[in-house]
Image: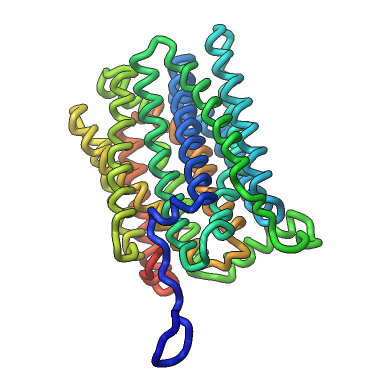
Length: 418
């Protein structure tokens, strides 16, 4: 299309969400992510419930997440390097193969009654390696599959996909564990089956191989180059540390839901499923609202959603009735999804495409940090109580956002995300 007044070709309009999903390769990438992640996140909740029933300890819940978090913290940046250096389809296939192995292993161990607590942190390590490879590869794949002007919208679609499944998977798993006698093993085996389905669907993707030969420097040097790039951009650096801290401090509430249901409300596994489903409802509703907006999501959504997330956690800690807790967790789930989608969307839309894999590797450190923080927070909950701990987490989240707004206002003025 040509601008008749200047003779310069006008940029093409971004494709709509449905148009992007109808594109063969992007549509299959979206489907693979949806199928795989709902199983992955369901297994996370099943592992937490299994750890709690085997030990009865909040610290044991934190231990499972600590193993996952440490692995993600170490491996995710290198997963970003792999996505920038290797064929992305190959990276995705390796990650899905690991997910199949870990799901079958724990599912059969539970089925035959030989499961032990040590297996759960070990499975968390394997799953952490798999996700450290899968997440940066799938996000950086977008630029290979959609027109340049539509990359931002593709990023938003995959972010909403992931964040919605982050709560849909646990909600479904919690309900299965609560109402089916073989629910725990069913969740693990179903997760392995879904990862296997994703592996089969990966044949529909192009190779996603980078242009030209990989740089001659070592992977560690590639990683350090990505870190230096972020450090050279104050706006990216501020968004990154804020997102990581909020995830580390606030996200462990998900690990404590089994204890919240059992200890605070006497609701058992069924109540646990209801609580997890409540957060899912909030996240899905928020994702649909963000996806339907015609106007770009304002950058101020990042700070507003983060503050709302912290305030809702404080309110959930004070709730004295299960029905009120359910309503508050709807808000918690929705606010967390909006915060993370805005954070990751702004980081990717403001960064150079050559660094997208490594940017994703750094962004996803918040999940590793969340796992690591779960153990000390679990120990704290055992000592001072769940209500004080969750309430303190909410206050700390609000404090982090306050510092972000005071310190980083000039470098991260509200812009629009794709």
